[in-house]
Structures are given as C-alpha cells and as structure tokens.
Image 1 (cartoon, rainbow, N blue to C red):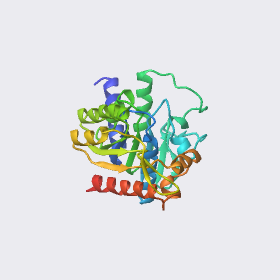
Image 2: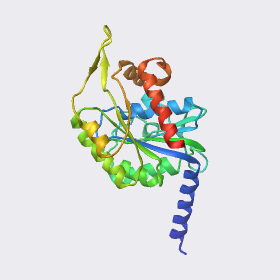
Image 3: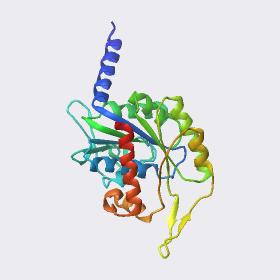
Image 4: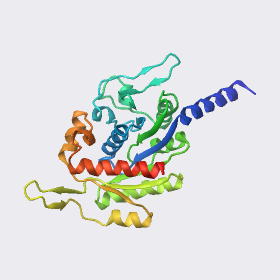
Length: 274
C-alpha cells in the first residue's frame, strides 16, 4: 500500500472517531435567506444546553456568519491544540460553538473563495475540531442547496434530521421546497418546518395580525407529509437578543414567543430520542 493510500485510511479513521463521539446531528437550513434560520439554530442549541445536553453549534455559513454576534462572542478567536486540532469556543460547560468568524481577524473581511477552499474549511470544522462527546451537534447552514449544505451532509455521514425554516410568504416557500427536495434526495430525515415571523400581536388590544398571506407552507406540509414544528411570532425582543448576543429563550423565557420555542425544543428531543 502506498503512502497516499495509508494517509487516506488514517484520515478516514480520524473522521469516524470524531463523529462517533457525537450522538445526534441536526441540520437547520432554508432555501431563502433572511427568514431567521440562524436565530432558530442558536435558540435550539441554547434550549438543548439548558436541558443539560452537551451541545455543539457549527456555523456553516462561511460568507455570512452570524453565530458569533448572536452568542456574544464577536472578536473571540479560536485556538489550536498541540496536534493542530481546532478548539471550539466555550459558551458554557456543556455548550461549544465554532464559526469562521472565530478564524478571521476582521469581521468585515469578505470570504472570496470558490468551492474547493470552502469544502476544505468545512472538513476542518467538522473533523479537525475538538468537539469531544456531544449529545447534539446543530449545524446552521447557509441559504440554498449548494456547496456548504451538501458538504456538511456528506461530512457528517449520518444526519439525524433536518429542520427547515421559512416565512409564510409564498416567494420564500418557493425556495424552501428546493431545500425539502434536497433533504429527500440525500436521505436526510425531515423533522418538519418552522414558520417564522408568522404573526404579530397588537400591543394595545392583543389582536393577532397575520403578516403574510399565502398557502405555500400548508401545501408543502401536505406534499412532503411533514409537521409544522412551530409558528413563531414576529417579536422585536428576538432581534434585540440576537444583536446583544444573548439567548432569547432564556432571557425572555416567560414570554409567549420563548414558550413556543421551548415547546419546539422539547418536541425535537422527543422526535430524536424516541
């Protein structure tokens, strides 16, 4: 056996050893940007950590990373271990995160890379990172069905489930259906859809006002035989929490929005650990 073959076998062995320490892997994605996918990913991870689960959160959006800002770790830099492994950033004893934002010096730097470089970086973020033993690895994917989500799905080898986030606007659902098709073609179990920014409540009378008209999500649920995991309201405190780098699900735990999120987290755990 030549040296290159031996190196490839050794590399495959290292990947398997890393992945064996991760019990459950969940991808969060959407065909459309700006629908709150990262917000859902971050609060899902925090919710799991609050339940005592060991959680890793991977920001696979290389061109528009937001995890660092949302977790209050903007400006923090990841370090490497003695053997060259990436050390994820500790958010709590049972919660660690990794984003390209921890690997570059300037948050305003544009990543002008083509596919091969992005794939190599994602490989390092998955297999050359000291995640340790995890109950859950949550992967926040960029919009679309291109290099990044495809690479992540292949690198993780087995994904326990995908959560798809969308607004109720039909133009959003048009792209979301492509994400549903993407998951099916890669044999990734679909856990369901979250309808985000669904409604707002009048602060004076409490009347519920639907923000978008459209039948796209109900039709997608029927066509793909899926459940609606949650209908999240448009809540300005969610945006405030994200900008301040605080966990909304914790800081505003008594609000209706946070309780909807908590039920969503509980439901995911039941589905994955049934």
